[in-house]
Image (cartoon, rainbow, N blue to C red):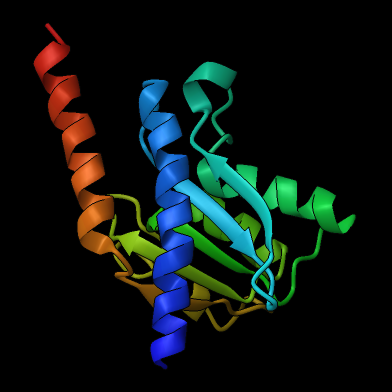
Length: 158
């Protein structure tokens, strides 16, 4: 169990690095890293909705796209997706369709979180794939980055 917690923290730290890239671009600082069962990083991503003019360019989607290209397959069984913020319903839909095995997230999202905060997509018995959810990994660090971003944004808006 201790090894798993250390691995979760290590990979979440990589996701935080991705979130910092989004922050530097003025995007909501969310980062994601997709890892296979051997610990190989298959895909990384950060929010790019504003710079790409793409409402689907969430960190999770970017990491899933890169992972699918890495594996030459749209299905991603055995993959763990590390995300700094609880995924939304769109991202959980993509995660489910890709058959991602596990999502590990940092900060909860009480407004749009689809892993338990607002709804729990993974618990819907009518859906044919159920992703395992692990929450709260480096939640303080993930939450602080988001809070700082929105505080700065509020200060700079008229």
